[in-house]
Length: 96
Image (cartoon, helix red, strand yellow):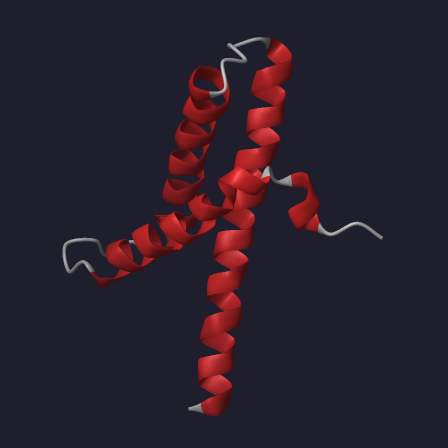
């Protein structure tokens, strides 16, 4: 059985850490009250960075195949980030 992480390009794993930090920043920001929107913001950031990396940095362009791959990658990256945050919160509740 394959892991979800096998579908994410290894060079994009750092984006999970980056998105986690952005999510923490948004949550701790007093001016940002709508915490339910954080996953959507992270998904948007994930899409933009993944699109820039794959299309521009790797030079694959903006073909339909690349856009589909970028959408899948960015959704998986954002999902792993949000799920990881939930795991951390649940572990802290259990131990705290």
